[in-house]
Image (cartoon, rainbow, N blue to C red; front, side, top):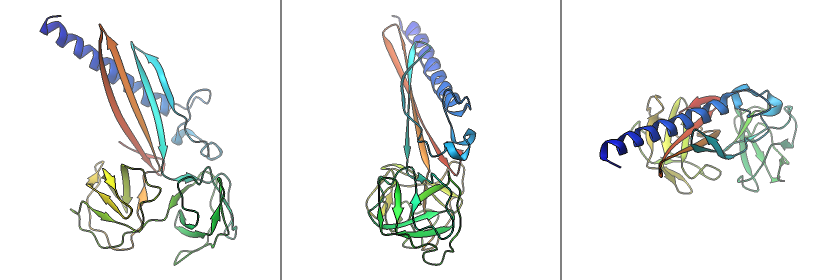
Length: 242
């Protein structure tokens, strides 16, 4: 194959693989209940269903793979302000005892099953007990342990347990992408990600994970050549951050 033909073939492969990414995103967004649920189109009762993974979807001479990861978990039922057991989709990754955050309420729990936080103290700390609806995100407790400036690339926190190995955190209205972590720090951070503004933040500010992430990979094949394009879509509070 001559250089010009190879260049043309590579352009076609790139177009095909990019088209696969767009198709994957469109699949995630459609509200056809016979196919794929997506957060913005699902009613609260369906939000307790973790998005499945899709692999090997055939499209335009290639394949699309979609995988999803959750940092938060999800309430499976409404709860009142005095309930002491909290039913969720999964407690995997949360410590055996600890503190969770639902909306603005901190809740301390002393044990758990696979799908419940038990012996809960409601309105822990300075927060107030409140009722919460099924489908609401339940976050791991995480706060800043020191003041940070708008340019700091190491974010010190109480614990990074339950957060994804790489991903996005939110402090107030700032999105921050981190590339690695240890037990008490998010490392190599990109401040003001996704067109948000990098700001200083005070010690004890709440730190939230991106609620869930969808990873789409599209591979096109033509004339014995392949091209793969990958994209990570991150969501917070039901809104898209790309």
